[in-house]
Structure formats: structure tokens, C-alpha cells
Length: 306
Image (cartoon, rainbow, N blue to C red; front, top):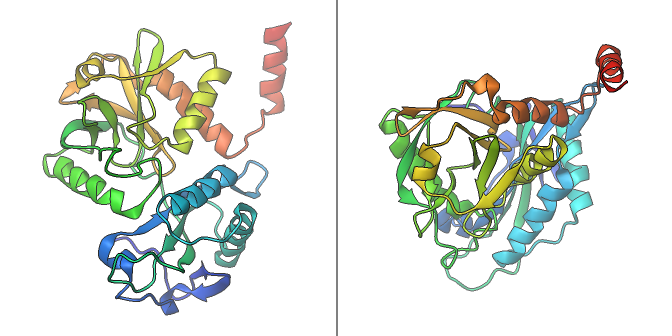
């Protein structure tokens, strides 16, 4: 199993830096027993100038506050307080390229009476891209994405991810790297922890919001499409639509942007290096490290625009 901390690791717990090995939680906690908690997945990077930069911290911490409110978890920290605390714990652990996990969780409460308090922790650890670097073999899951009439799926709640875990286990047991879940209407929704885009005839397509978690990386990809003049369409798409695609990729904070090799045992016809997804993957890598064009690149651009 992965080791996320050691004797020298610190986390931030309700305003204080605490050694991870000494931090405690209540085994009678409502979050432990019912999955009643909300969280975020955030990344920080060593920028091209050598500075530690959290990617889109405002968007992530605004969503954490929204998730806590959606599920009636008391939460009083401002977005700026959480951003400052995150930089503090990154400095304390001397990590730049990090995965950051803030979690708002409930106290001991075996009843369904609303809580009057909650706890907030920020943990950081080094993590490579979630799926690695190789192209993925993806399968349609037998599980569906939770119905938005049953859960507030626009929130990032811990309990939602039981669905993700069982779907991922099923896919891996069958020899695949990941799976795609459909919504209650049979349309493509998302992966177990990432949004999906697919390419057909020079255009990108992605499921509309409503039955998916509207990911922050997904929004970033849409912004990159606008910058790169890549046409993209949001809508309702079937697994058959996806099976006829030229290429496809997942995107998410943990996954970043990662291409697919095949879908339901059918290889995509377009080489990944020639896809719109690869173009976005490279642009995303430059964006998160705030890469600035070299003087050589700038000169080339100037010559191209004369």
C-alpha cells in the first residue's frame, strides 16, 4: 500500500500544524460510519520559476464551501484562510509537487440529528499522475453514476465515492485500467474520478453538467479549447457515440489529462500524438507550471506572425 506520511509529516487540523502520526479522529465519528464528509482534490506544482503554485485554489476552496453547505456540514473558514493554510502545510513539509486533500468531517454522532460542529484537515503528499503516463484501456461499467435526485452530485462528498471504488474494482478485476459510468438515462457520465472528452472529425465532445460532477479540470479543458480554437460540444452522448470516436481522454486533478488506448476492447483509430487530446495535454502541463515561452520560442512566434 502507498505510504502517505511518515514521522516527519505535518498536516493542518483546524488551525494548527500537527504531526500526521499523532493526529487523532473519533472512531464513533459520523463520517467514519456513514461517509458523511466533503473534500477536495487539489494539486500544487513547482512553477517554471521555481515557486510553489497551487493550481486554481480559489475554485477548489469555493467548491469545498459549497459542498459543506450542500450537505449541512458546519464550515466557517474563508477561501483565503484555507489557501494560506495550504501554503503553510506545503512549506512545513517541504513539498512543491503535491496532491492536496482538504477534508471537512463530522464529529461523533450515531443519529441523524444535524451537527453543530465539524472538523477540517488539510493533508499533502507527493503523488505522480493518478493513472500514470500510459494510455488507458477503458470499459463500460455495469454500475451507473448516482442519480442526482438521490444525491447532490454537484458537491464532492466522500460517500459518493463508494460508487467509484466498486466500479473501479470491477474494471480492474476484468483487466482494464479504468471504466466509464453511464447516468440513469444510459448516457455517458464520467469515470470513477475524472471527466471524459472524446474526439470525432476534428471536434471534441463532453457530457453536459447535470448528471456529472462539474470538474475544475474539465472547466480548464474547456478554457484551453477556447484558447486553442478547438471546437467542443457539450451534450448527451451514448456509449455507441463513444465507441465510434477517433480518440478519447480523461481529465481531473489527480488524473490531469490522460489519453485512452481503447474503449470496450476497441482501439481508437487516431494515434494519440495526433489527437486534440494530446494538444490539450501539453497545453495543460504548461499551464499548471506557469511555463513561459523561451526566447527561442518567442523568436519563432515572432517570425511566424511577421
